[in-house]
Length: 204
Image (cartoon, rainbow, N blue to C red; front, side, top):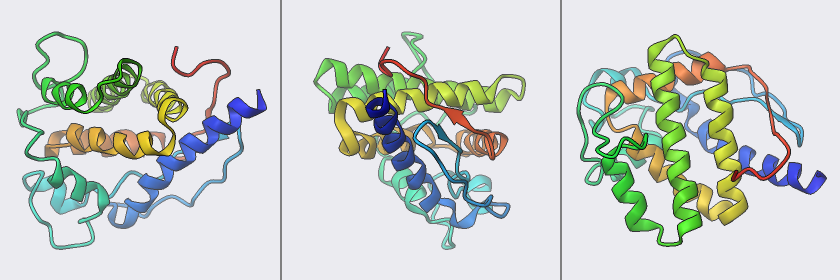
């Protein structure tokens, strides 16, 4: 049990540290960093989706501190993020909860079935988090818990390397102002919350 909780904590801390590095230009001051234990973790501030990034086309160069790692990844992934339709959902021909362009990227980059399925699960839960945040009526905390669980699974399968690769999936997902705005709203809604790492296989 202790090994499982430690592995989960490593995965979640690595992911949250990525987001904390992107928190330089949030619209509001970033919350005070919250400590963590091996079985509990608090969310960091939302990545820096600056005011200019939210009001201009998603891939515009802002020229300010909003040009963070996350926005750089969004720009880098732009050629593959072909769905720039309004709103959150985008095109999803097979109704599996993952946008078609994101699904195509995942299928092209992960040939191993367990890894591909785990990344697709993360993409689906990330999309669900955006939809929940945008609606304003869902349980955004539960949506984040599910998403963090999927990241535990990614770490269990591929370690730090797969967690790093998953950032490209996030960048693909946040390819328009509407999607960036929903992400920021969701992260603000959970700021200060605590999320308990559940026991058991995170990939189930």
